[in-house]
Image 1: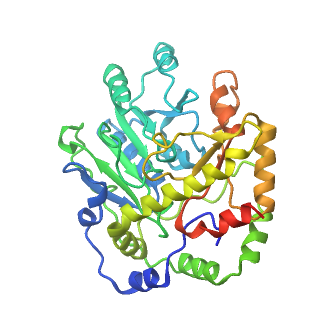
Image 2: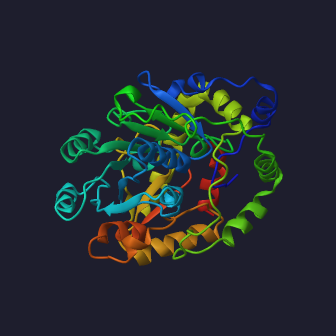
Image 3: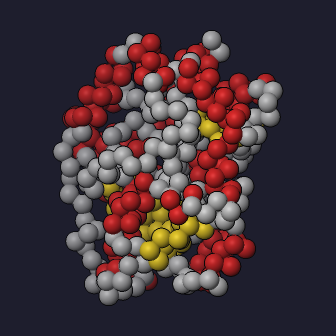
Length: 374
């Protein structure tokens, strides 16, 4: 089976229909390090929205100045924009870390950030200690974006005032994103604004269940044909429909609870799948290579990341894999403010053109690798 996302088993779907719903805190246990304040949403974009709305409520309805890395999906920031947040995009280096010299220079050119986002790309841990030090100097609160992270590892989540995860990106579930707030009582007070911090329970995700069931029934050739007909290498995927409703479904809640007992096995499965892709591309012969080594990749990679020497090589690999029906992806899109200033954001634009991403979830093995060799 070759799909972009993992598919639930029939037993998982049955469990999602009848099992009990855990509390927010119970469901968050695999991600908790301290006694954090816990909030669940359908998508992490709503966690970003909530952080900005909290800031406004704490600061006389003044929208925050938010610094995001320039290698950031523009569509993911749409809800943040709706809050009125003022977005600036700081340059990153070729290792995905913030380019700290540029960040310090930006401090001299305009207002400092109120919220500074550090993104742990693809399950790889960035330097949270350095980010916390920069935030202490600039007066910002640190937001750790761990949407690509299965569970905390390598100090991910150890420094942020806010940390969010997106289990729905790595598990067979229709939704589910977790926001953790550290030291809530120490943050600027807004009378503990519970109106936008509380979530109701959404209805079961019937559309998602139907779609995943059809994918499980579909023969491989249908899935291959669908992938072959998808947009090409140069097409940015921004501008799609807005995020789903804020609230997490009962289906998502029950499925995440079911997978919470299997996370170590899921992590090992992802690591093994990435190893297979690593071996597959070892003989590419055109200078393409894994972007991370085994340790940098982390214990549960979100995708296998392939770095190509140039755009033409990346496009050729992408086209070849898509023709075989392999679920290969590029970075979805970059913000207009980034693409409009290619000199400042040259690294982000290079990464958009040179990196490819391949699935490492359980539903893609071993057929995806067999297809790649045919």
